[in-house]
Length: 121
Image (tube, rainbow, N blue to C red; front, side, top):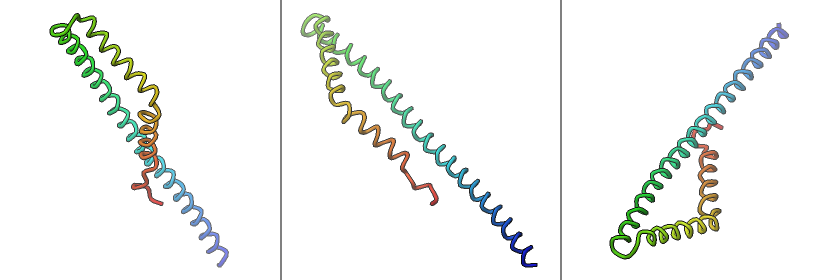
């Protein structure tokens, strides 16, 4: 009688371990899905803001060129000024790319991936 009871307990324990492992796998899948969705959302927001900023910069550049042509000098001089400003900004971005781009990006990705508020230990 005892051996039947032990084998029943062992099979029940095995079944419970299988269920537990499957539940943990499902939880990891859900957490991973949530984190990937959050990262995709952040990426989409960055792309949208970048496109909007480029349109803003484009129209501001042409506005400056037309203003310069009307009030100061020829339009080509205004275009050269805008080009020099973009060139200096590009050089600054290349020089400070780690502080301006890489570190904030790594910080944001780490914050998304290491956020444990929804995980059950």
